[in-house]
Length: 210
Image 1 (cartoon, helix red, strand yellow):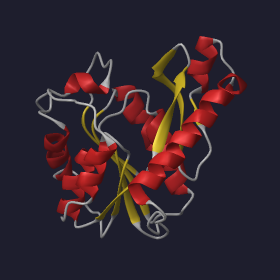
Image 2 (cartoon, one colour; image 1 turned 120 degrees about the vertical axis):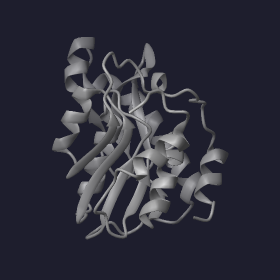
Image 3 (cartoon, helix red, strand yellow; image 1 turned 180 degrees about the vertical axis):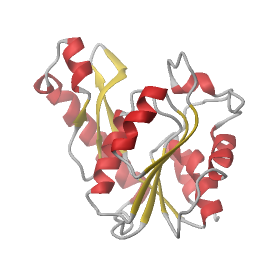
């Protein structure tokens, strides 16, 4: 696999060719970055594309460092080893969690309005993101989906740290990763173009006929 990927869409096309044996799936993208990756995958699999809204719970002095995450319909999931190294408890993050719950509710309203998630019970479900660093956001999403009792739960991402990819095998029935490069510092380093996406970008992709 040649890195970096050109962009999220190109990575999604490559990923779509690697996901096999899935029947009429629900493809759940983790917005915002997972949506352009998931769109070509859903088209190739003839699946239903939707979003599963998640929010990272950041380390207060350095919010981009995810110490936990929450997915719609689920409870917060924390990286307890990281919390220990940072000298934090879950209670220390209560205000951050409430702020992220509020933003999660806002995004659910923007992306789906009053429409609920598709029925996941007894269905093949593919959860898609643009990459995995710590994996805490994907873990929160997978645990939420698992509670819905899908027939098969697949995690598909273009790039991940090797350690995180291995850990995800405990959360999903199948983990599909195109590349696990060494010296993994961030997801964005493995994309030539990795611009920030807006809510309008997400809505545009979700509204595009497949």
